[in-house]
Amino acid sequence: MNRYIVPLGFAAALAVSIAAWWFLPALGELGRQVHDGGFLVSFLILLLILQVSFVIERIWSLNKAKGTGSMPDFLNNVRKKIQTGELDEAIKLCGKQRGSAANVMRAGLERYKMLVAEGAPKDKIVAETQAAIQEANGLEVPLLERNLIALSTIASISTMVGLLGTVMGMIGAFGALSHAGAVDASKLAGSISEALINTAGGLFVAILGIVMYNVFVTRVDGFNYMMDEASYEAVQLLAAKASEKK
Image 1 (cartoon, rainbow, N blue to C red):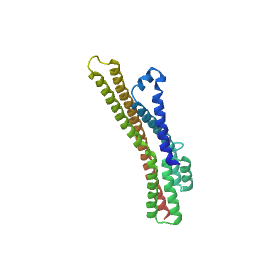
Image 2 (image 1 turned 60 degrees about the horizontal axis):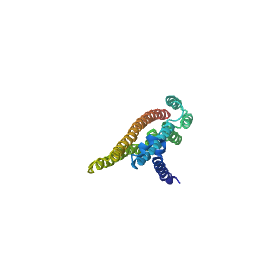
Image 3 (image 1 turned 135 degrees about the horizontal axis):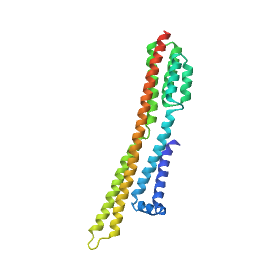
Image 4 (image 1 turned 90 degrees about the vertical axis):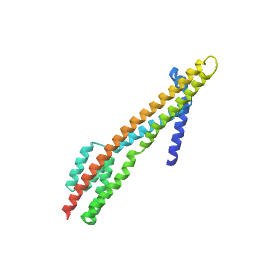
């Protein structure tokens, strides 16, 4: 079922964009002007719909990745539980927080607890705990970066689509000028309007995409730094606890 979600979503967005372009004149003078930009405007509307969908998905996913409650308070509480040897309580705190950093730390804590129960040597405990944290981190990062490539691609494509519409409009404008005799002013004005509308639409979608892409990349970098910092400190604390047990 999941494999049909993306094609169906794209088909729905395409249908909505074509319908929106078709009914633009009903919105008044501005709608008629945008509609006069030609059929490529419907493709720009499609790109805008996809872009807004990806932006909403990223906002929801990154807010979910942040987890619940204050991150500094969570890290301080986990640190205290590790220092006092209350690993079960530290794992419970990670389960309640439910953020990306909490998931990474929980994987390391559970692996550490299992190895200690088995009586594994310190070197093995530290190495496998680090491996568990790295593995969990490798699973979380793709989720944080999902759809960022799509946002960047849409920003690039929309610029090209706007440029294509501009070129097509200018071809029509020069075609009106090339006729012998009096210039067809209405055709000339329509072609220039088509060119400018496509330029404006392409730039609008591209600017929005670039801004949101940079915002999300900055947030993802912040998450990655936070997870690395928390994971490193957790490994050091667990290594110290492993030494105390020997």
